[in-house]
Amino acid sequence: MRILEVCVDLDGGGIDRYLLNYCSRIPEIQFDFAVVDNKIGILEPQLEALGCHIYRVPRQRNGVRANYNAIKKILTETHYDAIHVHLGYRSVVALWCAKRCGVNTRIVHAHIAAEPETTKQKLIRKGFTVLVKRLATHLAACGVDAAKWVWGEKAYSKGQVVIHNNAIETTKYAYSAECRTAVRAELGIADDALVVGHVGRLCAQKNQLRLLDIFDEIRRHRPDAVLLLVGRGDLDEAIQRKAKEMGLSDAVRLLGVRDDVPQLLSAFDTFVFPSTHEGLPFTLIETQCNGLPAVSADTVTPLVKLGEDVRFLSLDESDVVWAQAALAAAKRGHDLEGACRVAQAGYDIDREALRLRDYYMKAIEAGTK
Image (tube, rainbow, N blue to C red; front, side):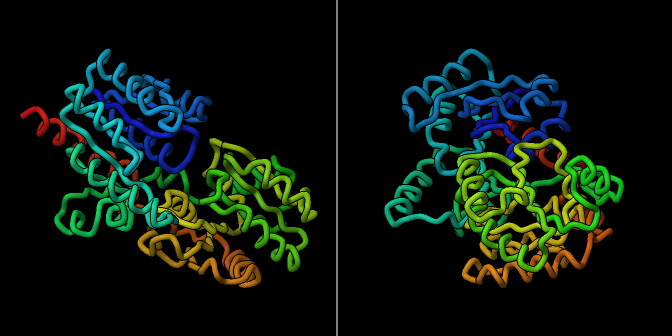
């Protein structure tokens, strides 16, 4: 049984880690990937070690025909029982190609909700969503909000959308005092320094430029504070430039893409997440598993909140209010019951992988009838 997963990249973002976590636990299925990013993602070696083949296809914005032909080449040269597209309403080309190539099981996955858009963009999204729903045989989403926003209230209420939890290896993300000490020693950070953390693609959606303003306010109260940014993206240079202009270069560290996020979470004192829009963010499940207190924008669905380790704030609140919330959160320390709570809420990868395996097999079986 073979499935082609279509996504933007495999560089350690939420969707990418979701795919790695699941694919590594379903040996009954051969997973391959079609990605539109030319750079080699940090997760690619791990997936290739599992036997996954990774194809690179042109971005649609560089030519829809070229994108279509690249996917067609993959699907005609190798038999796939299903295609699973993680591009939301932008999945039209891949789904249309899969249908034309005789792939009877076509799953499309929504990972985002309430993305800011103009009236024109909304009309385009709505129009393409109609096409996507006609071309797909199965609709999926990372959470209820994403399901409703992308596929519609009616589709969700009729049970036409299946929610797949962004599950994690809970024991791996549990808080570790040993990891905290080791990571801080590696990074040259004092044990008693305040560490503000953030994990996410460096882009407008994740709002790291606003985070710098919040951190600047935190430093007024805690001059020893350090901001650690994990990830990379379009804003790398803009963040470095703004940090320099604010006199924060020595306190703001861009760590790039890392494969030791669980250990880093233990080294943080608080997590600040001012995203402009999200679906159900994988990162906040990880922080809660670690018991790390977080302050998040209320653009995030409240369904992500599993205990008292996440506080929501409006992006309209001042930097002062955000800074005060982050400082208060840091005083709480890590919640040692976090991993247990996350597992009980249905986000343990070993349990959810079995559910996803059965979902794939039933979907493929239905497509052969």
